[in-house]
Structures are given as C-alpha cells and as structure tokens.
Length: 417
Image 1 (cartoon, one colour):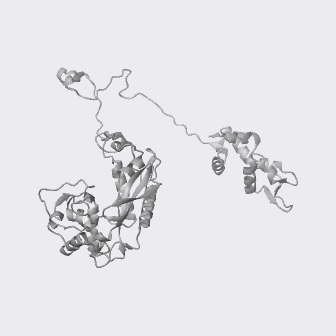
Image 2: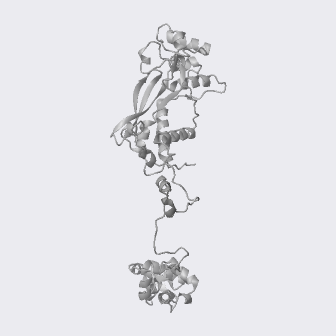
Image 3: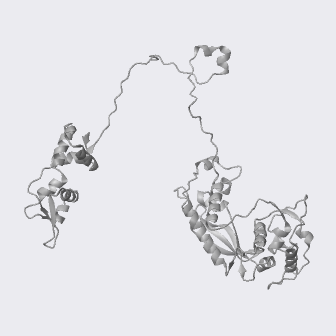
C-alpha cells in the first residue's frame, strides 16, 4: 500500500481539515477568505464533520470559528505510518476512509514459483498442425511431432448471418407502424386481376393513366371471374356515367378487360381490396371523418420522429427534414409526394407518395359520403440510403454490393417501452 500524490502532499503539509483549523484565530475567519486556499472547501467540510469548527452568522457574514482548543491530525499521522510500511498499526476503518478520499493506493503484487516440468527441454521443435499427403507418401510423418487436437476449442465463426441494411430498416418501419396502431395487410399474392389493380382504383380502360405501370399479362390462367357482382356493377357505372359528383370517363367499360390477370403492378391494389372488405363490415370502417392531407403530414412527421428514437447509435443518420409537394395519382385527389433531404447527395429526394382516395373509388365500395380514406406508399431504399450514408443505390443492392458494407453496419436497437 502506498500514498497517492495528494496523500504525499498531506503527509508533508498536514490534512485539509487541520490546515483550516490552524488558519483560524481566536475570532475565527471569514468563509470567503478560507475558500481562497486550495484546501478550503474540502477542509471546511471535513472539519465540520469532525466537530472541530462551527459556523457563526451573527455578524451578518459567514465566519468559521473553532469549537475545540486542541486537535490531533490523525490523517497525517496515519499516512506517515503507511508510508513507512506500518499500515498494520492503522485501523482498517480509517484505511477505508483514506481510500475513499483517494489518499492511499492499494497495489496487488503477484509472485510465481517456476520449476522444470516433465517435458522440459532446451531444444524447441515446431509441432505440425496438419497431416499432408506428402507426409504420408514419404512417411516423414513418423519423424514429426504433431500438436494435440483440442476438441473443446471453438472453431472460426462462419462469416454469415448478417442482416442487410434494407432488412433492418424494413423491420424498423414495420414495428413502428404496429406501435402507431396499424394492422398488416397480406401482400403475398403477386397475381392480380386488372379489376382490382386498375378498375377499382378508378383508372379507365385503354387510357394513358395505366401507361405509368409496366404491366405484364398472364397467359395461364389468363382471366379471373370471381368478383362481387353488385360492386362490379357500381364500378362499371362510375366509369361509364359517373356519379357521386363525378362525370366518369364516358366510355364503354368492358368486363373482359377487367378480368385479365396481370403481375400486380403496385400494392395499392391490395389496399383497394382491403378497403372493399372493410366497408362491408357491420362494426364500422377503418377511416376518419374530416380526414385531410394535413393529418397525413402529421402522420409521417411522427413516424420519422419515432424512427429517430428507435435506433440509438452514432453510426446512424436519420430523416429529420421533410417536405411535401402536390402531385398527380389517378386514384387519389388531392395527392402529395414526400421528400427528405439526403446529406450525401446534398439534395431533396422523394421517399413516399400519398393522397386522399377519390370518392369515385370509395363510394361504390359502400363507404359513407362523409368518410375520407388516405392512402400512402413509402420507399424503403431511399430512407435506407439516407440512414447509412449511401450515395449510390448500386452500393445498396445489386451485383456490385460490397459485402463488407453489410458486415460492418451494426444492428443496434433500443426498443423503448
């Protein structure tokens, strides 16, 4: 056990509390004067605790006065004993107090006794790790010493099992939407009829509104024929003649065109089917009266705020700046694009699309006239690029992805209850 730098100084000059005591005259001293000394603050506290001094405020100022006539500086005395390797003479409770004040340092010294073992030798021979074909052929293995196998040792971990950044952000988005009260729609059906993909969304047949989709038609099965008949009739009428305040498209709507099977071009087709099912429930609908795009703006502001608190690692950036811009969608009016600022690209990039579903789409489903439904879609790739500081989408997925990027991006999550 030895003394710290402060302990050595106290051994030479006395403890802080003793120095405060000796600084006081018969009438004491003002507290401000004592605090000018390096030992003042600690010394006053320790001397008060020991009962050596008191505080006098009768003069209007704080004055420190003596309460006893004589003191013994036990701190200095015991530090001298410890410095002379006589710590056994010091009370253990006092030693703990000195450790707490960081005046003494306890050092552990380990000693070893070394002796020759049964395999001791002054000649070192390299032990072989592997038995090779050449050793067997030449029989040189007979003259070699092989290292003993340790079957309890861990092998090298395979460099696998890393989650791609897209998977991490996908999981995060999903969990946050669950927290906000959303339910998950089944989107695992990739074959859809033109009716649900286009017609139910009030997109006219043989019209440029459908050209924004790269559509692939199936040859087998080429068509579907199971549709709600009353709903199909209402969709036909709204396309041909209009209704609910709309003029429609004034053309001959054909069921043959609506029956064609395609590879689903967007998940909004799933939204349309789910909305139709929800509108038929007796209990009510999942929608809001007096709903507007302002609510959608608030939804995404809160959503990305939650994204920022879901991850708590310095390696992650997140989206804090959002912008909203009007746009056109065939099945929503008004419609709105969502933009976020990409620091690496130094520009605003689109990360989502949204809008209020048109009455021509909702009312034929059976929704009340005063109920509004908002639809939206979020990009997964661009928010992931912003989060991980990736400037080129080819660095995120595709044949040129650097696997080291996947390995070094940690999955750090602090789920807040």
